[in-house]
Image 1: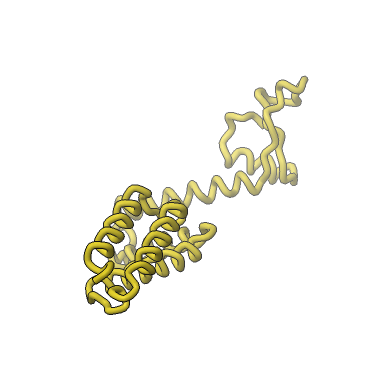
Image 2: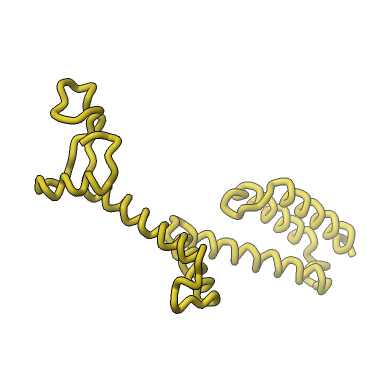
Amino acid sequence: ARVEENASKLLRKMKESNIRHLLLTKSDGVPENKEDVVGVISMRRIMNVVVSDERLSLQALAKKFPTLVASYDPVEALKAERTSYANELAKREGVGKQDVIKFGTALTILGGVGIFLTESSWLHDHADLGMILIFILGYVGIIFEELFEFNKAAVALLMSTALWITYADFYNS
């Protein structure tokens, strides 16, 4: 089969010959030397291309002309799109673990902000430990910036601000 042939012609040749793989060549007929052979293509690969083409065509038509679809509901379409996007995200490796880590980080940050805002007596009594904890948490945030998707500079600025506030307001008070 020639490289220029479309998927339907290749599928027809495979069906007629009762085979699942075809040699792709630069010209028609039996290849005369190695340079004429471009590669091998399987029926599965061709079907994947055909299916994705049909799916894309149907989706493009439905988006372009939503009234062609008899039961078109924009709310349902948005729900389906959101579900599809969530399923794609769920297929990615490590997304669930990252969500748990981000939730834990956010909870820790909110707890720390709560201690500052309530002017906790623990922070008055243990400002030195609080500053050590702030430094450690800030440094962990800098080290794992890619995992948390934080900016190093922002984490460093927040950490230094928290350290100065702790020192000014709570240390030796």
